[in-house]
Image (cartoon, rainbow, N blue to C red; front, top):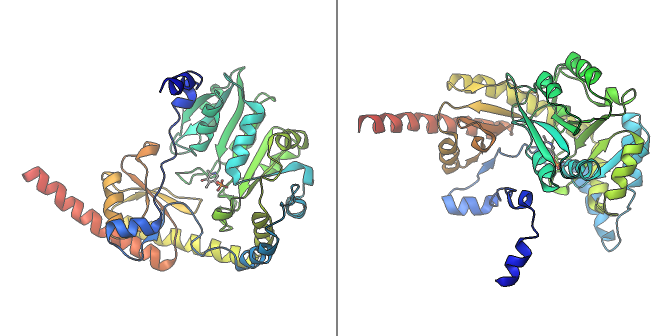
Length: 380
Ligand SMILES: *Cc1c(COP(=O)(O)O)cnc(C)c1O
């Protein structure tokens, strides 16, 4: 006990105040607990079609070499990505999921007291990574469900080092207008790094926004993050990448561990990049899902934000946590958004057609029951 308390005084307050990521239970456990079968998971913005078959084959072929350390430079994957995006391999840094790129950025640029600006709600990982090293999170509320670039610019101080912008935004699915990106970059001090987290960029239709990549040539402050976890269906492999100025990339390379990208991830990602067919199918299924849900949810009386990603933020006009729980009993797992400051919203990931239909049907029954239930309470 005594020793524990001694250790405790060395733990900084900002570490003690971190909130652990809520550990979701395995699907199989949930099914047992709730006595349900064939539950469907539309909660984590994963690819409902599964991984690319080409990626699976490449991973299988790499299995025989698991006794070897991976290629620490990820030579083939970096070169392949460099060719695709017309940058040099030295401008690409790979991470154990794009989550790790967020940590690298923070480790390189942030020390206790440095300021980092992000939006609320947006991806919670930015704030966590910053707090974990004693940085200061400056959090700007979305305006009309979009990044409020004017307010973000207004929050910049001498101490600001990084601005994180998820474009599209998670959880609203909104994007930044193309012209707004140019205007924003034009008025920012030139020693601030702007990180565009483009985890969902593949899903954006009709050029609704622009990628940070378009600005990198003339603007060394711009960092673009991408991932294989969403459109490419490889969330379980943990691989993502950042594209940035070569000098900055060099610093990120210095802080990473030598073998952060395992050999299966390298093989799978490389093959997935060549599987245009799978990507096309994924985008088609996602867009059809969105169009289906817009109509169906409207008929249920829910309010939906137009989304440029593979998920929808849905105002169910009812306690989201309870709706989430009731849907679980119907075997449909969605995400309750109360932790993001949306007590009446759930987030639904686009699934296969039968999953989307089951989700709408479950929501229909849950909302009908809830209305009945609430009326009962009122009359009781
Ligand atoms: C899902 C997601 C990611 C991807 O994280 P990985 O570590 O690559 O799996 C990154 N940013 C946002 C906003 C996301 O929603």
